[in-house]
Image 1 (cartoon, rainbow, N blue to C red):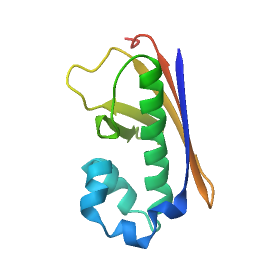
Image 2: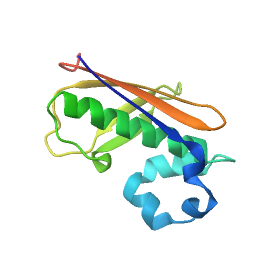
Image 3: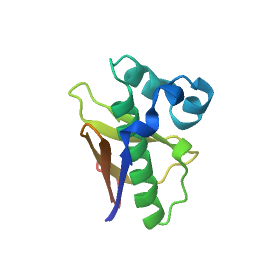
Length: 119
């Protein structure tokens, strides 16, 4: 089992950054941006997803898998439970569990990797 964690200040996603669609599209998938930008204040949601991507990358690196932010998509179930989808060719057979949270000022994420996906 491998673990990754990340915390980020929400104000890093200020109004100027929220208008930089080119930059945001390098960090987030269309689905992630669609979900976050429909919120009245997208910054906490973007920050939480960014922290989730960083936490997943750290856990993947600990498991010996080289991954980039762009290889990670933070998803959510109909019930609102966050998940991780790997966008890389031939993704490893790992189960990644993730937890996201934010306060008024910070977003945090934890990622845990188990050896093999459960069927």
